[in-house]
Length: 289
Image (tube, rainbow, N blue to C red; front, side, top):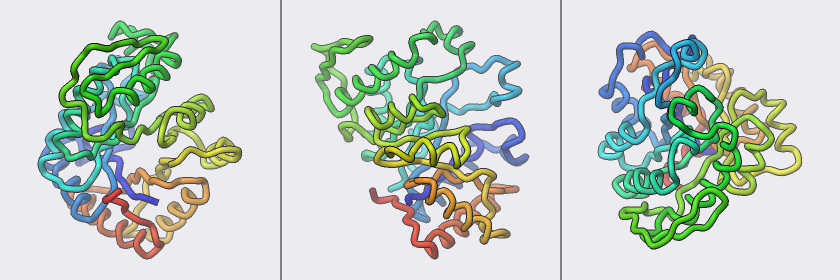
Protein backbone atom coordinates (compact mmCIF):
# COMPACT_ATOMS: atom_id res chain seq x y z
CA UNK A 1 0.00 0.00 0.00
CA UNK A 2 1.01 3.58 -0.66
CA UNK A 3 0.64 6.09 2.15
CA UNK A 4 -0.80 9.60 1.84
CA UNK A 5 -2.51 12.05 4.16
CA UNK A 6 -5.75 13.99 4.32
CA UNK A 7 -4.17 17.42 4.65
CA UNK A 8 -5.06 19.32 7.83
CA UNK A 9 -6.30 22.94 7.86
CA UNK A 10 -7.50 23.01 4.22
CA UNK A 11 -10.82 21.33 5.10
CA UNK A 12 -12.53 21.66 8.46
CA UNK A 13 -15.45 19.34 9.10
CA UNK A 14 -17.71 19.71 12.16
CA UNK A 15 -16.30 17.84 15.17
CA UNK A 16 -13.58 16.34 12.98
CA UNK A 17 -10.74 18.85 13.16
CA UNK A 18 -8.29 19.85 15.87
CA UNK A 19 -8.58 23.20 17.62
CA UNK A 20 -5.21 24.42 16.36
CA UNK A 21 -6.41 24.19 12.75
CA UNK A 22 -8.89 27.05 13.23
CA UNK A 23 -6.05 29.57 13.59
CA UNK A 24 -3.57 27.89 11.22
CA UNK A 25 -2.69 29.10 7.74
CA UNK A 26 -0.44 28.42 4.80
CA UNK A 27 2.72 28.34 6.95
CA UNK A 28 1.39 25.36 8.92
CA UNK A 29 0.10 23.64 5.78
CA UNK A 30 3.49 24.09 4.15
CA UNK A 31 5.30 22.72 7.19
CA UNK A 32 3.16 19.57 7.27
CA UNK A 33 3.40 18.91 3.54
CA UNK A 34 7.15 19.60 3.33
CA UNK A 35 7.65 17.13 6.19
CA UNK A 36 5.44 14.54 4.48
CA UNK A 37 7.47 15.06 1.30
CA UNK A 38 10.74 14.61 3.22
CA UNK A 39 9.45 11.40 4.77
CA UNK A 40 8.46 9.97 1.39
CA UNK A 41 4.66 10.09 1.60
CA UNK A 42 2.84 9.39 -1.64
CA UNK A 43 0.30 12.23 -1.68
CA UNK A 44 -1.58 14.98 0.08
CA UNK A 45 -5.19 15.93 -0.58
CA UNK A 46 -7.39 18.99 -0.93
CA UNK A 47 -11.16 19.07 -1.48
CA UNK A 48 -13.40 21.39 -3.48
CA UNK A 49 -16.51 23.31 -2.51
CA UNK A 50 -17.22 26.75 -3.91
CA UNK A 51 -19.95 28.06 -1.61
CA UNK A 52 -21.66 25.98 1.06
CA UNK A 53 -25.05 27.18 2.36
CA UNK A 54 -24.84 28.22 5.99
CA UNK A 55 -27.31 25.59 7.22
CA UNK A 56 -25.51 22.86 5.26
CA UNK A 57 -22.15 23.93 6.69
CA UNK A 58 -23.37 22.81 10.10
CA UNK A 59 -23.21 19.24 8.74
CA UNK A 60 -20.52 19.42 6.05
CA UNK A 61 -18.32 22.24 7.24
CA UNK A 62 -17.72 25.58 5.58
CA UNK A 63 -13.92 25.75 5.22
CA UNK A 64 -12.61 24.38 1.92
CA UNK A 65 -9.38 25.85 0.59
CA UNK A 66 -9.19 25.85 -3.20
CA UNK A 67 -7.00 22.92 -4.30
CA UNK A 68 -5.47 24.65 -7.33
CA UNK A 69 -4.09 27.57 -5.33
CA UNK A 70 -2.95 25.36 -2.44
CA UNK A 71 -1.22 22.81 -4.65
CA UNK A 72 0.41 25.44 -6.86
CA UNK A 73 2.00 26.97 -3.77
CA UNK A 74 3.11 23.61 -2.37
CA UNK A 75 4.50 22.38 -5.69
CA UNK A 76 7.29 24.96 -5.45
CA UNK A 77 8.25 23.76 -1.96
CA UNK A 78 8.30 19.98 -2.47
CA UNK A 79 9.96 17.51 -4.80
CA UNK A 80 8.20 14.12 -5.01
CA UNK A 81 4.90 14.17 -3.16
CA UNK A 82 1.77 14.04 -5.34
CA UNK A 83 -1.20 16.39 -5.17
CA UNK A 84 -4.59 14.68 -5.12
CA UNK A 85 -7.78 16.65 -5.63
CA UNK A 86 -10.17 14.83 -3.33
CA UNK A 87 -12.43 15.58 -5.04
CA UNK A 88 -13.17 18.01 -7.85
CA UNK A 89 -16.89 18.15 -8.64
CA UNK A 90 -17.10 17.45 -12.36
CA UNK A 91 -20.37 19.26 -12.97
CA UNK A 92 -18.90 22.58 -11.81
CA UNK A 93 -16.36 22.72 -14.67
CA UNK A 94 -16.00 22.22 -18.40
CA UNK A 95 -13.45 19.43 -19.02
CA UNK A 96 -11.13 21.78 -20.90
CA UNK A 97 -11.20 24.17 -17.95
CA UNK A 98 -9.91 21.32 -15.77
CA UNK A 99 -7.28 20.38 -18.36
CA UNK A 100 -5.96 23.94 -18.62
CA UNK A 101 -5.90 24.68 -14.90
CA UNK A 102 -4.79 21.31 -13.58
CA UNK A 103 -2.66 20.59 -16.64
CA UNK A 104 -0.76 23.73 -15.71
CA UNK A 105 -0.41 22.41 -12.16
CA UNK A 106 0.81 19.08 -13.52
CA UNK A 107 3.37 20.93 -15.61
CA UNK A 108 4.73 23.18 -12.87
CA UNK A 109 4.84 20.28 -10.38
CA UNK A 110 6.75 18.01 -12.76
CA UNK A 111 3.88 15.56 -13.34
CA UNK A 112 2.68 15.14 -9.75
CA UNK A 113 -1.07 15.62 -10.19
CA UNK A 114 -3.60 12.99 -9.12
CA UNK A 115 -7.03 13.97 -10.38
CA UNK A 116 -9.66 12.88 -7.87
CA UNK A 117 -13.15 13.56 -9.21
CA UNK A 118 -16.76 13.01 -8.22
CA UNK A 119 -20.21 13.83 -9.52
CA UNK A 120 -21.21 15.76 -6.39
CA UNK A 121 -24.16 15.57 -4.03
CA UNK A 122 -24.83 19.09 -2.72
CA UNK A 123 -27.85 20.16 -4.79
CA UNK A 124 -27.93 23.65 -3.30
CA UNK A 125 -24.41 24.32 -4.58
CA UNK A 126 -25.32 23.03 -8.05
CA UNK A 127 -28.27 25.41 -8.11
CA UNK A 128 -26.13 28.32 -6.95
CA UNK A 129 -23.57 27.71 -9.70
CA UNK A 130 -26.15 27.07 -12.42
CA UNK A 131 -25.01 23.45 -12.83
CA UNK A 132 -27.31 20.55 -13.75
CA UNK A 133 -27.88 18.37 -10.69
CA UNK A 134 -30.27 15.84 -12.24
CA UNK A 135 -27.88 14.95 -15.07
CA UNK A 136 -24.70 15.04 -13.00
CA UNK A 137 -24.02 11.30 -13.33
CA UNK A 138 -24.23 11.07 -17.11
CA UNK A 139 -22.50 14.42 -17.53
CA UNK A 140 -19.75 13.35 -15.15
CA UNK A 141 -19.12 10.13 -17.07
CA UNK A 142 -18.79 12.07 -20.31
CA UNK A 143 -16.51 14.60 -18.61
CA UNK A 144 -14.13 11.82 -17.50
CA UNK A 145 -13.97 10.48 -21.05
CA UNK A 146 -13.25 13.99 -22.30
CA UNK A 147 -10.52 14.44 -19.68
CA UNK A 148 -8.87 11.19 -20.70
CA UNK A 149 -8.88 12.31 -24.31
CA UNK A 150 -7.54 15.78 -23.54
CA UNK A 151 -4.91 15.71 -20.81
CA UNK A 152 -1.45 15.93 -22.32
CA UNK A 153 -2.83 16.92 -25.73
CA UNK A 154 -2.33 20.49 -26.89
CA UNK A 155 -4.91 20.03 -29.66
CA UNK A 156 -7.57 17.89 -27.98
CA UNK A 157 -10.48 16.38 -29.87
CA UNK A 158 -13.53 14.77 -28.35
CA UNK A 159 -17.08 13.86 -29.35
CA UNK A 160 -19.37 12.80 -26.53
CA UNK A 161 -22.90 12.96 -25.24
CA UNK A 162 -22.46 16.22 -23.34
CA UNK A 163 -19.11 17.64 -24.50
CA UNK A 164 -17.68 18.02 -28.00
CA UNK A 165 -14.69 20.03 -29.19
CA UNK A 166 -11.90 20.19 -31.75
CA UNK A 167 -9.78 22.83 -33.50
CA UNK A 168 -8.69 24.28 -30.15
CA UNK A 169 -5.32 24.75 -28.48
CA UNK A 170 -4.78 24.04 -24.78
CA UNK A 171 -1.27 24.95 -23.64
CA UNK A 172 -0.07 23.64 -21.29
CA UNK A 173 -2.17 20.50 -21.11
CA UNK A 174 -0.11 18.65 -18.51
CA UNK A 175 2.81 16.22 -18.58
CA UNK A 176 0.70 13.13 -17.83
CA UNK A 177 -1.66 11.91 -20.52
CA UNK A 178 -3.76 11.54 -18.46
CA UNK A 179 -2.85 11.73 -14.76
CA UNK A 180 -4.20 9.01 -12.44
CA UNK A 181 -7.95 9.54 -12.07
CA UNK A 182 -9.51 8.59 -8.74
CA UNK A 183 -13.28 8.26 -8.56
CA UNK A 184 -14.87 9.38 -5.30
CA UNK A 185 -18.31 8.34 -4.08
CA UNK A 186 -20.24 5.95 -1.89
CA UNK A 187 -22.55 4.19 -4.32
CA UNK A 188 -22.35 1.13 -6.52
CA UNK A 189 -22.44 3.47 -9.48
CA UNK A 190 -19.29 5.24 -8.29
CA UNK A 191 -17.53 1.86 -8.17
CA UNK A 192 -18.73 1.02 -11.69
CA UNK A 193 -17.48 4.43 -12.80
CA UNK A 194 -14.08 3.65 -11.31
CA UNK A 195 -13.98 0.25 -13.00
CA UNK A 196 -14.98 1.62 -16.39
CA UNK A 197 -13.40 5.07 -16.47
CA UNK A 198 -10.98 5.55 -13.58
CA UNK A 199 -7.71 4.28 -12.16
CA UNK A 200 -8.88 4.03 -8.55
CA UNK A 201 -12.00 4.02 -6.40
CA UNK A 202 -11.88 6.35 -3.40
CA UNK A 203 -15.07 5.72 -1.40
CA UNK A 204 -16.23 7.64 1.65
CA UNK A 205 -19.02 7.22 4.16
CA UNK A 206 -19.01 3.41 3.87
CA UNK A 207 -18.14 0.76 6.43
CA UNK A 208 -15.35 -1.71 5.72
CA UNK A 209 -17.94 -4.48 5.49
CA UNK A 210 -19.82 -2.53 2.83
CA UNK A 211 -16.60 -1.91 0.93
CA UNK A 212 -15.61 -5.59 1.09
CA UNK A 213 -19.02 -6.61 -0.24
CA UNK A 214 -18.89 -4.10 -3.08
CA UNK A 215 -15.38 -5.20 -4.05
CA UNK A 216 -16.08 -8.94 -3.74
CA UNK A 217 -16.81 -9.48 -7.43
CA UNK A 218 -14.44 -7.04 -9.09
CA UNK A 219 -11.92 -4.45 -7.96
CA UNK A 220 -10.42 -1.47 -9.81
CA UNK A 221 -6.67 -1.01 -10.20
CA UNK A 222 -6.37 0.86 -6.92
CA UNK A 223 -8.63 1.32 -3.90
CA UNK A 224 -8.07 4.41 -1.74
CA UNK A 225 -9.31 4.08 1.86
CA UNK A 226 -8.88 6.03 5.07
CA UNK A 227 -8.93 4.82 8.68
CA UNK A 228 -11.90 5.69 10.85
CA UNK A 229 -11.42 6.89 13.52
CA UNK A 230 -8.10 8.76 13.03
CA UNK A 231 -5.00 6.82 14.03
CA UNK A 232 -2.51 7.66 16.78
CA UNK A 233 0.77 5.92 15.91
CA UNK A 234 2.67 7.74 18.66
CA UNK A 235 0.51 6.79 21.64
CA UNK A 236 -1.36 3.76 20.30
CA UNK A 237 0.77 2.08 17.62
CA UNK A 238 -0.99 -1.26 18.12
CA UNK A 239 -4.35 0.25 17.14
CA UNK A 240 -2.72 1.99 14.18
CA UNK A 241 -1.29 -1.33 13.00
CA UNK A 242 -4.71 -2.96 13.31
CA UNK A 243 -6.25 -0.15 11.30
CA UNK A 244 -3.69 -0.58 8.51
CA UNK A 245 -4.24 -4.34 8.48
CA UNK A 246 -8.04 -3.94 8.35
CA UNK A 247 -7.85 -1.51 5.45
CA UNK A 248 -5.45 -3.76 3.58
CA UNK A 249 -7.74 -6.74 4.15
CA UNK A 250 -10.68 -4.71 2.85
CA UNK A 251 -8.83 -4.13 -0.43
CA UNK A 252 -6.91 -0.88 0.09
CA UNK A 253 -3.86 -0.27 -2.07
CA UNK A 254 -3.54 3.40 -1.10
CA UNK A 255 -4.21 4.96 2.30
CA UNK A 256 -5.53 8.46 3.04
CA UNK A 257 -4.45 8.79 6.65
CA UNK A 258 -6.06 10.99 9.30
CA UNK A 259 -4.18 11.43 12.57
CA UNK A 260 -5.02 12.31 16.13
CA UNK A 261 -3.13 15.62 16.51
CA UNK A 262 -3.09 18.55 18.92
CA UNK A 263 -0.70 20.98 17.21
CA UNK A 264 1.33 21.35 14.06
CA UNK A 265 4.36 19.97 15.92
CA UNK A 266 2.34 16.96 17.06
CA UNK A 267 1.06 16.37 13.52
CA UNK A 268 4.62 16.26 12.15
CA UNK A 269 5.61 13.84 14.91
CA UNK A 270 2.69 11.61 13.92
CA UNK A 271 3.87 11.68 10.29
CA UNK A 272 7.26 10.29 11.33
CA UNK A 273 5.74 7.70 13.67
CA UNK A 274 3.35 6.47 11.00
CA UNK A 275 6.15 6.21 8.47
CA UNK A 276 8.17 4.07 10.88
CA UNK A 277 5.12 1.94 11.68
CA UNK A 278 4.27 1.17 8.06
CA UNK A 279 7.94 0.51 7.27
CA UNK A 280 7.83 -2.17 9.95
CA UNK A 281 4.67 -3.58 8.38
CA UNK A 282 6.15 -3.63 4.87
CA UNK A 283 3.90 -0.85 3.55
CA UNK A 284 5.43 1.42 0.91
CA UNK A 285 5.14 5.19 1.15
CA UNK A 286 5.26 5.02 -2.63
CA UNK A 287 6.38 8.57 -3.37
CA UNK A 288 8.23 7.64 -6.57
CA UNK A 289 5.34 6.03 -8.44
